[in-house]
Length: 119
Image (cartoon, rainbow, N blue to C red):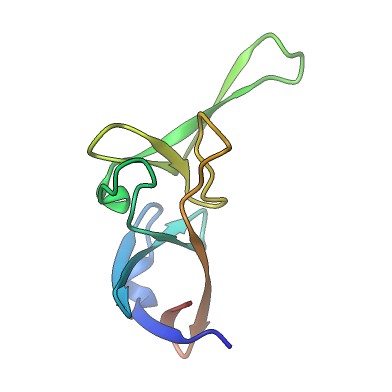
């Protein structure tokens, strides 16, 4: 059974892109507010161990329905590792450029106004 770790009060994560960190038995995890939902990702870049979740947030490029035009989702749901620029989707944990790589993600629960990460 997963253990729960208190991360923050919901009032600390009210704005789009807000983040809070917790040490979950030696694993640092960040919880982000993305489009009003909480998503947890390990603060560890799989490339070279950089502090992934301390990077800036950005939107995400994609391919249009016609297969020719690029689209840009300006929702800040991609985090950029500050060490070498690797980008990861905060919802799925997957690398934006190479789906062979992914940052570990975790479930998030809210109870009585407190945000918890489950590991």
